[in-house]
Image (cartoon, rainbow, N blue to C red; front, side, top):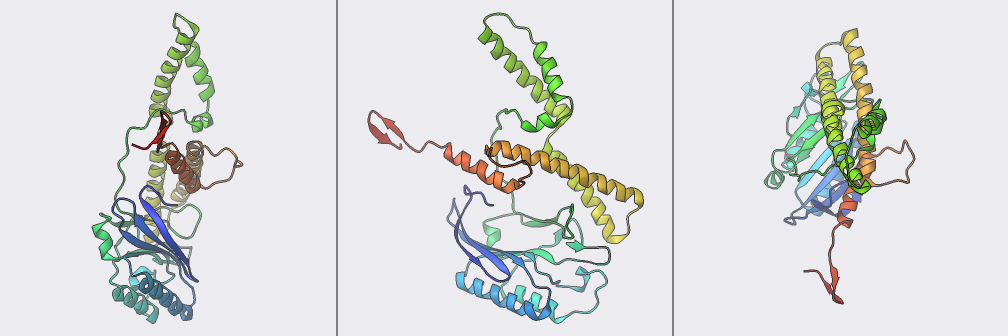
Length: 315
């Protein structure tokens, strides 16, 4: 669930309301902690959650990031129709103030949970100011939801630079209507002269060119499509925060969700291929697992030493 090329997990702790991990950056060995939270619904149990988090913070004494469903709001404006301040709201703000945590504004919407009758911001990320020195450009954004009452919250702090991606045949192309017929037509229209091996090599080069062109103009980038659908769905979610949707907009929202599920399936197939995991059944869906396996394969492809003239060399 994390990139081991970037951070290394040192320790983990499981509590009643939280799961915490202690991390160390690979590059600069800076140590910090992250805690995932699921807060209680009952007011009388929330004090136990604060005590648990305070104990963890005092034990490790590290720069910290807390994130998850706190099941409590800070201000009246964070719940639809809320009135006066409550003791639970004051306790939440006291916890943030006591530990000097930062609470960035939520981008992309007002609330993180809603049903047909109510809406509130009960999910958020909090973090120590020291983390800003090591992870820049912090932001928390509300993403569109598909099935849950909760909106996913994305906590961002920059991106990694990547090199040029080599060409690979994508298994998801086989899901496109008429793709095999198109490939057959391309192959039969390639004409080269010389030896059979030369002809095969030339045909494969020509096929690669046509596949890349077809992917750019017809099939498209699955990640970009998915982000576009998220954006459309989020726009309707934001509108629904303030006013009911029309029947046409509800139908449009249902279409976006169906297309988003299809795009997510294509993304899973792509990660399955990259991870080279062949023993899972169709329907075993966990993109993070495939992502982890892909990174593992990349690490295994690294040559750490060679036997040269009978001597082991790592230089």
